[in-house]
Amino acid sequence: MLDPNHLFDITVIGGGPVGMFAAYYAGMRKADVQIIESLPELGGQVATLYPEKEIFDVAGFKGITGAQLTANLAEQLAVFEPTTQLETSVKAILPQEDGTYILETSKGTTHTRGVLIAVGNGAFTPRKLAVDYQPEWENNYIHYFAKEMAQFKDQTVAVAGGGDSAIDWALMLEKVAKQVYIIHRRDQFRGLESSVDALMNSSIQIKTPFLIDGLTEVDHQLALSLNKMKSTDQEQLVVDKLLVNYGFISDTRILRDWGLTLNHHQVSVNQQMATNLPNVYAIGDIATYPGKVKLIASGFGEAPVAVTELLTKLYPEKRQPLHSTSIM
Image 1: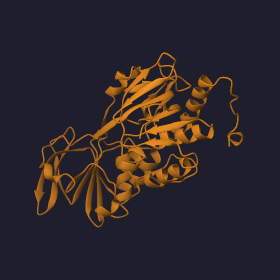
Image 2: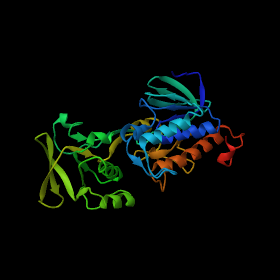
Image 3: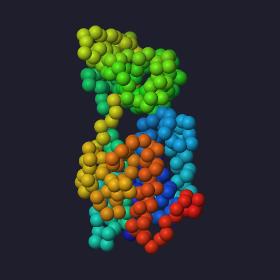
Image 4: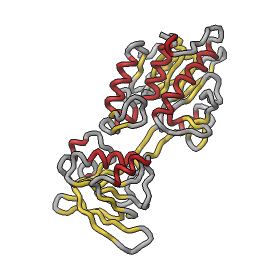
């Protein structure tokens, strides 16, 4: 329950991995923190869409699933027990005369000295196939998320897409599926070099440069019509499941309503992760600056920078610790 009379030091908007770590670090700094998350649980897109997908850019782990990472972060976060508001959306950030902010949410108002925005890619929906198909095929033949690899066990599966997530899904499916194909409209994949190397050395059959231009149901399977780019050549591929990863369409329009300066739907920040609004900072995928690398690891590094800078602005009389060992 939101308490409109309580004044928090920092409100973290977004409960994904980066927001969770930011709240933990703020707790280490003895700040009074709350997290506001629109989903029913913490973990964000990683926990909701990719719980079994392995993540390779978190220091100290050669690979960790989204579910494991979220569980570890939740255990870490529990040390300081920050106030957490789930299934709550922030509608407006309203500056007050004393320099604080009132946040209007879907469940009432809350009061905070500073704001840390960690909403990832914003409200997201998957990019759909640009071909007609029966709506009931979704979640039967056609999938846009792969929450559990077990649903593809011993089946023939095609993955459509050429980025990191598509490659990662294909490599994970190779361990459980009978046969895996990956379909990409270019000859070159856009994933990390190590992932592309693993793909090339796997049993996954690569279909490039092809685009799916038709779908039909055949004997309780899905027949894909593949059109070779810049050619009249066509192939047909029959699979049990089609897993589509063309990326996501994010809705960040509300950020402009909050008065933030945006650059290509992302929040512009300086080297200290500060936005154009006083005591409002942004970190993770939603933040952009020259040289930005969109990785979870980057967001984990941005969180202490933003928290430290924000607390320095809020409490300039307090000495800031120079080393993590001097915080606890």
